[in-house]
Length: 286
Ligand code: AMP
Image 1: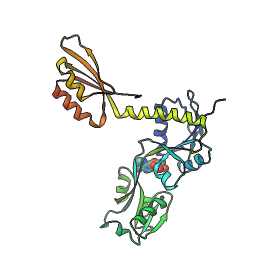
Image 2: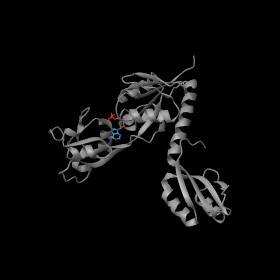
Image 3: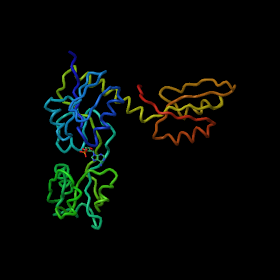
């Protein structure tokens, strides 16, 4: 029987939906049901294990799973010895120190001698050591943001993305300690057969990630403008140029990076392009 690549994903929480969505976009036909602990893909030798994300690094290191999807925050907090094989670009957040909104925070030295509640004692301690600050670190496993209000702590160190949870607890973010996003980790001693499956999966993930950064662009332009338009959107090799039924005009197809998309559009219009259509790309293989 063919070996399966065993992938650990979060059982419930913020990472789960996006992890499964990424694997599905990479072409894996995964059936998930409520309260299921395992799932398989019908079209790729993969088995998914649904686990607590804090437990995933250890399961991967012990070889119970080959690969796991977790936050970089958890990986760094546990000083995990697994290999990071991909940055996945979702669940972006930061581990930050926050203090009550009415505190006049003057800089890291304000934290000297203070009580700070966190679920990330190691990352916080590293930050405090770097800043040469001595503080009392109180480890709590959840609801960190209420600890200042109930008199347990003077400050907190917790994950933030929009800041709305902090604001609703009358806290303000004052200091970033660590930047996180979802990552894929792998057992460093993964066997050769599974390594090949992992390489195949990583190749597909890279194609999905690349595609999400680029758009397919179609436009019409006078033949005399083809060179100028090509210089603006050179594409992967060079644009496709097709004659229009109207003589003296062509249709030009290319790809454009989302980051400089609006800049290019303005340049294209100035060069004489018309009828510009922009459509998403599903996969991109270079
Ligand atoms: P949770 O489901 O709350 O246990 O969070 C799981 C992971 O999602 C964390 O380890 C972070 O990597 C990420 N995460 C946590 N909080 C946020 C947030 N506010 N915004 C985005 N990602 C987050």
